[in-house]
Length: 434
Image (cartoon, rainbow, N blue to C red; front, side, top):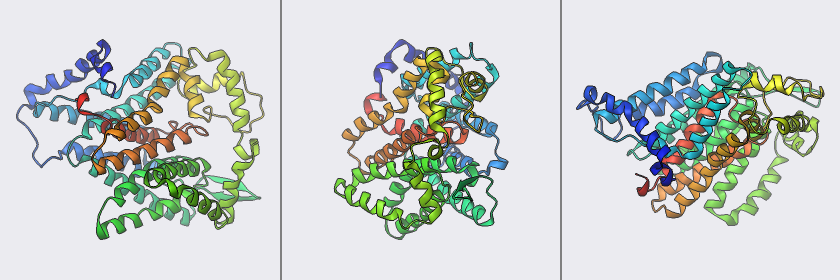
């Protein structure tokens, strides 16, 4: 944790601002501590709410639900801190990169072509980092990491079963064409196969490590519950998710036993030929380095790079409402679809908020991996060490998925990444950070 930032003038200002609601609530909440052991109602609300958010079918979901949930959970946290006379986690604990990024996003609002479109995405970002803050603040509370990992596992299993049932009933709405045939793509509760595969790639490492850490029959049962997500992610036909999940599993295997990497790669390559024909064809299409194999990405990226040359300093604003009007001037007309974003998270952020915002974004989006590495070298508790490794794998999966896709495009995936990021921030804290 960057303690220097917390001690700096901006860090102290953020901390003062963050503790103000607790001080205001103190006269009302004093002495009204909720009983129930180390886990308070706010812990259950946060963990179950995050899991429930992923389980709501897309047709019944409204992004406003996520916004309301985040700020209701924040109010509960402030109330409990006031009741327990407890100092809330410093707002600066999220690190300078997060706050620099949000500040740049706020400044870019002034020049965005569509202020409403920019503000909509900014609200989602603020919601996501509120969930980051709350998750990080709860990671040191006894029992909460175990509760949250259990809820993530439950959400992963439930959404997989739901998605497989929808797939079997033929109710999926998205398809991928291959060899003159349309293959339905499993999207489960998250609308599209790409979204669901990204969720699976980030959730499975945490769930796998948590399940493997149980004992006896419970461990066997929990590991069996992870089989439906493995089947579901194959039926997404999402190469992004497959590659991201493979990267996460390589990271976990590296931590477990480096000597198994080469046999695992050989087994993985051999297993490709045992896959159903449609899945195998989709997977091998990644070897076609052209627009046919990349769904137009190479053309789109070249157009966006020309766009970036003219807008690299200040960006064009957040969201499709700001991206597409500017993009039209650089489009070659070769694409058969209207792109809502650059189809690469790193490029999209650079285009949206310019060089300063992009630098701030990289400092926390990739920088968290270095923070986890530093914490890992100092960690003595085996359970926390493996959770650190699982989070490293999950965030590596996210970093990989962010190359061919804009990871934050679908708000619930943004919110889930922010939760994983919050777990990583919380577990990488050291005593000197408190």
